[in-house]
Image 1 (spheres, protein in one colour):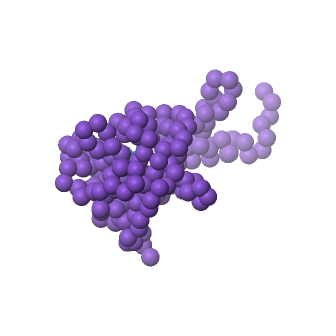
Image 2 (cartoon, rainbow, N blue to C red):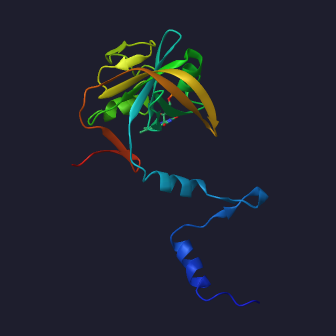
Image 3 (spheres, helix red, strand yellow):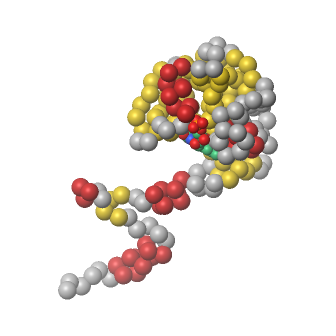
Length: 189
Ligand SMILES: Cc1cc2nc3c(=O)[nH]c(=O)nc-3n(C[C@H](O)[C@H](O)[C@H](O)COP(=O)(O)O)c2cc1C
């Protein structure tokens, strides 16, 4: 057997202990495991928003952390929505949506729009909202909102990347709700 370079065994053991093993996939590429993927991503802190749109006979909303600013000229933003979420097809067919940025203390609203609390599908009952330009519901409780027309939908694995052109926006200020390590937290200043 060929001698291994000095330190190889130690490196292999370190990788095992730190759970950085990769497993080979078809085609010789190295794939990350779902556990490695989730463990790394849960340390990414983000804000929390509720993306709303209209649907036949009512309104639809989903809790979303994958929201990002994309362009200033023209004003574009993006959200990533799981294909099997009910909001996915509603946004695609309505061609508009609003991003409602949640503030500190709005955990319950977030949980309801994520389908983790209350009756699924009726979470907006009793939540004050209005419309701006596109007709997508803008939540009165949001610390900031952006009313968007859908301008592109790109494939992104089991999600779609929806690009919205901002038609109107508002902000009221206040500390944001933060999502980190699978739980809600707040900014400490
Ligand atoms: C904090 C938080 C962030 C989330 N971010 C996203 C997201 O960015 N995209 C997504 O598709 N689902 C996200 N989800 C999951 C959806 O909110 C959840 O699957 C929801 O039930 C889908 O609702 P619907 O099927 O009624 O549309 C998130 C959930 C939580 C609690």
